[in-house]
Image 1: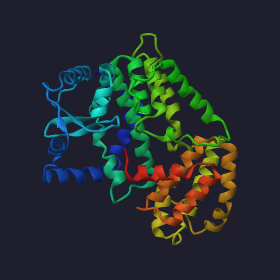
Image 2 (image 1 turned 30 degrees about the horizontal axis):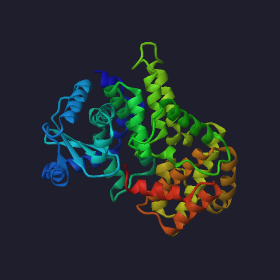
Image 3 (image 1 turned 90 degrees about the vertical axis):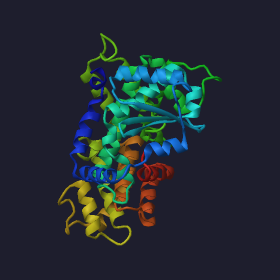
Image 4 (image 1 turned 135 degrees about the vertical axis):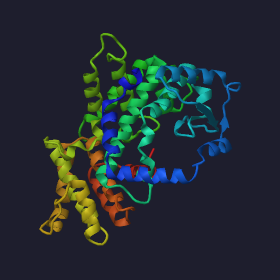
Length: 399
């Protein structure tokens, strides 16, 4: 099946790993028990809060859905819904009673061409065919019991690779890179295309310029969009361009292996690989993360058994001991911040700040003292405090 062959390899591998994680298994079992006791009522909520699009009401939308279903080799009844919203958005829900539900914002249906809608439809259906709903990321990250920090980072890394897979499903349905890029442009800009003339090369050049600028040291303004998954990420555009240049699309295209290497290189900023990395850059990032995590653990009421447990879940068993000089590490934090500024890029510093937010949130809530340390570190790294706010919001309300 072509749809399965184009799935992003890291999405596949990370999802298998996550589905074997004890915490993920436990949450899935809890959800299964809840669903076994009563119907979760998804279809009832959709019927009461949005408009179901019948074939008579929306023949063109259903034709697009039928084409995507055939292209992706799906065999499940589909219901389409629309809700009133000025923001371009679409979503696919976990199946209920043998039905799959896809919902669109009214503005998106009215502003996207049929080719563009084909990409959006294929993207949403891609989440289903690749089993993305089997990992309950919303429950894991948004529930009362927070996952350990390493699991949280793996969930975020997987969710971004899942978007890459869904994008490929949408591109496979659309078969038109210009329409795909135009869709992402509309999602990024909020423009309908009526007032401007879209140019694919200009749009892709903007992404290249962003990469070059973000690679330069000493940039005063951080680029938060490199860490965004919704509604738009320039990394997704670059990843789709690589896909379009691969043997999945062109007979003389780059190999599947080279495609996955290219995508992994693009997405590397969003992975916790520096924790095990051997480069000098990884060392400076890791040293800052270690001291920052210690300072956060000690911020409120000192380091107790709960803080030690969280710390060792992140860094590994035995990494915290009674011999650890907490005071010296906290005093050295400023030096490690300065070293990170001299030896890492803005996006890499943002990654450490983001990971420290994950560590702080692991206890269930971030105290004022912990937030103060996060803001102090961010200030020293020339990262806006707004990035901390948005990261914490995402941890509480995942995409």
